[in-house]
Image (cartoon, rainbow, N blue to C red; front, side):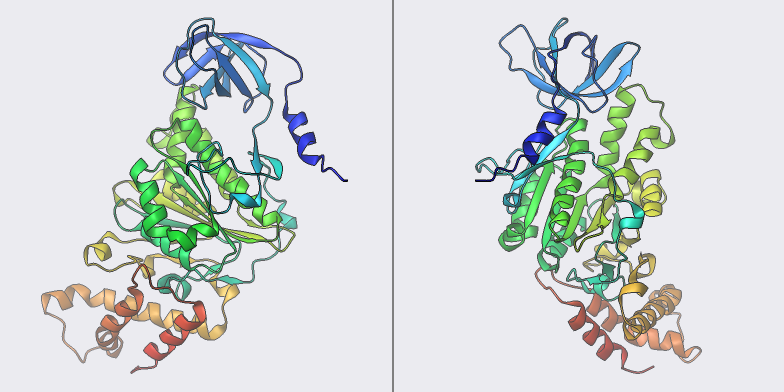
Length: 440
């Protein structure tokens, strides 16, 4: 009988083979300072108090002089001066396996759904290295997500990274739910980072549904967890997606939201003594963003990770620091417009403000020409919308704007879509062709 030893070798290499320990010297906020053991950043320790409280794990986040700075991974109670700090492992690893499908896990990979512990197959690093850029396959295939405003006008590709940018309350979660239900990807990995506790169950039952959950792995690190758990939850979602990509699966990785991931990194950085920069974000925030986002994409095999990351823009400011940084890293962005949402236009995708940088590489010329025509009509109408609302527009002066006024209701009807209404790219393009064949 053959025994696969790789998993055990990985665990042994991550372990700390020497029993070393230090003691707690100071606690300020979420940060615990100790005089040892000598551990690298990312190392895992266990803190043991002299009382009856349960020991808990903490991760090394930095150093101050000769002392280490730790942040709890679990509920920390009973910490006192002199509490023992014991080394557990030098690196952060996670256990993964195909049985994760259909499960809801916390930021540490523990079940949240009341089920049995997940039966895993291998152990992988949490903070893995991105794929060598020269080892990535070119992106050449479109990915259906079932939303017409995206499939037809901002077509996504297998291996693309895109941001959904919006303020609060304009339908980001519902859009993610639609995409997870109707996508043609093999596996969904959904990271709910910093969400309200009640929204997790709502998303799973209302937006994702039973069928969507069957081929999904949900990672939930809610807003009441420590910033370290929220940060690790995002990296855990990326690592799980990488596992399925290595199995030659096409993965749709959705994260809601990367802004709250950035806020968690900000809390950790400021607690460790980093200087604040723009909007109080420390420099580490802007180094973590590409590390996280670059883990999506293709590799040298047949699998892919298509990354969809929501960005919660503050005050609907599309140029705030996190939105600006994410937009510069990803391969396209979908903008949700509050003015459309207020009219009951869902999904509230502002087509003219959105773009997929890889669309021209994955669709045929006819599809591309139709999308340009659709955008031109929307643009022509946008020029006269205020005049139309005031009743001051006169027909006959410009045939393009006259045509746009004639077509706008039909175009908006095409873009509006019920949350339970899915569509393939092929079907949507046929509908768009018939729609644009009228008139001009």
